[in-house]
Length: 599
Ligand code: ADP
Ligand code: MG
Image (cartoon, rainbow, N blue to C red; front, side, top):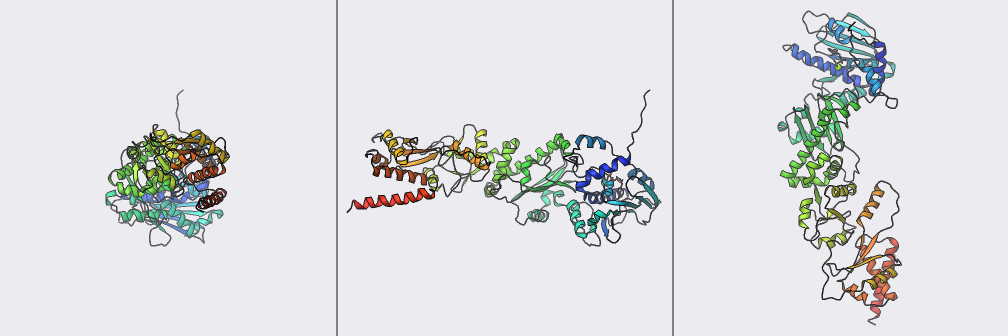
């Protein structure tokens, strides 16, 4: 009973699917027809090596006739070849694909642009397609194939007298925009800018493409000027890139490309601004294909050419494809290698770039474990004095003063006084002032579980000293009562501690975790009204505090307490308008009191 046979597919059922699928990327027919011309030329170069031909593909619009022509001087086709290659469309599995991946919310079926449909994409825009072709074989005769719907065709004698193929599309009424020079040029530049055969538009004398793109050259043959010129040309970005990575491997993948680090805006807030153009054998496929390019790398600009990538399939396939995963991991690794290479051999330059690239690197570390693992020793902190240190260097330098602590500031100007308290003790303060740092700090703490980050106004760690044994210790209870009374806050958290700087009577601090929580909710738009969790630390070594502790509870004492508190507050952040007026009025009052004693 066993038997076998071949399954046939009816063109009537398939053509509507082609048109529907490719609808949103309709202009892709231009890419497909130009690519076929390039393929035909590539084949002729091999099959007919002696031919003295200036190979080219020409795209011509005839507005009067409503026709678009794609002319090549490639291998051409015999009548049998037309029969074989054009009349037999191998759509194996097409219906299954639509069933499996097509869905109503996503009418494209999640398909990336082309689907290997190639030639038949012409029927998305044409109501008649003619192939006029002459094979390069000596005894071949010219053939003309014509079809109005891609389902029925006629074959006739053709009119070409030189080998090659002319494909003529009689455009449907609605598609006449493709006859416009501007649209045509734009589409050709989008898809064909780097194809391997010179492509001419109409009577233009210069090809519209660069047949030998920089990324295919050997990196050792490329100059810095070439890299920069290529960047400007491709990305229309006149701000030069910081640096670039030239990817050039044949094994284990065939992968070529150049990734540029653009100058990023400091506070990009995680918004991707980059653009990575994906090519497959010099044919443009799409921008920023997230399955191939790790998400954080889409902040970069660049080109990736991977001829072996199975791109004419759906994105869900790409997601699960082992090859694509390896490719993506490889690209990440190369970028990390370039950065760590710079860090190890050109630390000065790396530091120069750090201000610009740090948001990108931080984002990458948080997004991609393997990137972090490679980068972790090359992560820098910029200190408020302008120097750059790694976490290890920072911890080493401060080991005596505050073990496993990193002090940081989020605003060098507003927090200047608090910063100075640390720097004057010889403790470095890291500037972590971009939006991404809020998350990055927590990330680093998670990765380095013994290290704690503390904003300069979060506590008094690193600023304390041993209490002077000789000195009489002020009465903490009495002082607490004074300040609570003065500030009208009977819950005010007051501690009395010996601080290193005797000139400093008090410090106001805000709990690190509570403040971070507030920062987070600000960024993510949360609306948690958190009461400020401020703490007042009085310096037992300060003569002001000692004197205050000896006073009676009277209005003058309370005014002094308020003054001490405001001064401490001002070291942390500017006073708000009302508090500032009160402070000024009080300062004047205290001055008058002082002067009245002279009288
Ligand atoms: P693909 O390019 O993926 O093979 P196409 O549908 O684009 O699929 O083309 C089908 C076949 O038709 C090609 O493989 C080629 O043999 C033939 N063909 C198409 N265009 C040309 C051309 N301009 N010159 C010669 N042969 C062509
Ligand atoms: Mg093709």
